[in-house]
Amino acid sequence: VYLSFLDASADSTFKLGRQHHATEEHIRESGMAYKFLRSSFYADFVPFFTGDDGVIRAPAGDGKVSWICRNDIADTVVAAVQTDEYDGEVLENTGPAALDFNETAEVLTRVTGREVSYVEETEEEAWESRRPTGAPDWEIAGWVSSYLAVKNGELSLVSDTVERLTGRPARDLESFLEDNPGLWSHLSS
Image (cartoon, helix red, strand yellow):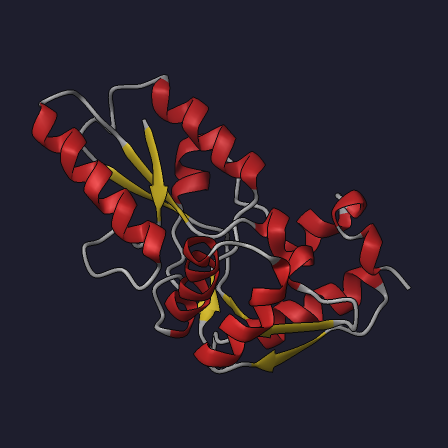
């Protein structure tokens, strides 16, 4: 099982999506057996998109993300490796719904009790707002291109993979965050 990005393709907007595509192609060409488990963005990271001022800033437009928790990914990996049923297949692994960043901010507001909002940035503003982190350009390019992939609709797919492989539905963002307050305690009011 190779863990990949939901839109792993040669023309993925997300820089790492193109790299995952190249790895998938290499694996296919090798002749070895494979299962590609392509996952959406991690729900676990959502609280960390919010600044100290309670604002999520990103060039994501009104694009949607089918946030998936890493525990659901782990459970689907375990299920996938225990069977030959999905050999040679691409399994798209997502949460149960796709949310835009305004909806994501509303979930954070309800769960944390702190007002969280979304402000759309331009691509240039995103680069400038992330430069003070001191991260190298290749890392900033990954961050910014991930939001642009959202804007372009590359993470809006919703699948039943978690339920099909594990026998239970994928966790939705709100219940996942409610059950994991350590992820957002820095945001609580």
